[in-house]
Image (cartoon, rainbow, N blue to C red; front, side, top):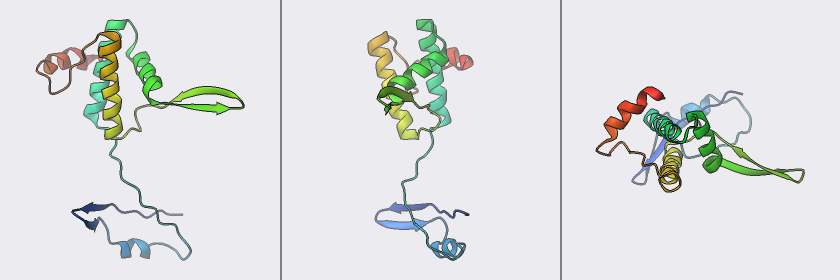
Length: 142
């Protein structure tokens, strides 16, 4: 079945629609339907992703791991969930590609804190004075 959708936004108590709801409903065939409204998530930004990989390259250089192993380790630490099947329990990590910008910020904040407290690595943020030099060093390594 074809899905019809629109973006709606509520600001200052007023809801606006990207497309007319009447128009969208007219596209549906006869039958019963379920209307679901969920908050739109914005996928992680390209700059967030680039920052993450620069940080992982820096951590990899310092620890002797690959940046891919650093990525997988942090995904396991901060993005995994516990699952029990047939009495056996394990952790299933998820990757970063499906994270929203807010989720990615939270993930990066955890990586930043962990690198500092557990590894003694200070990872610069884009607003830091010396970030440009860091970016020149690590952008080519992602």
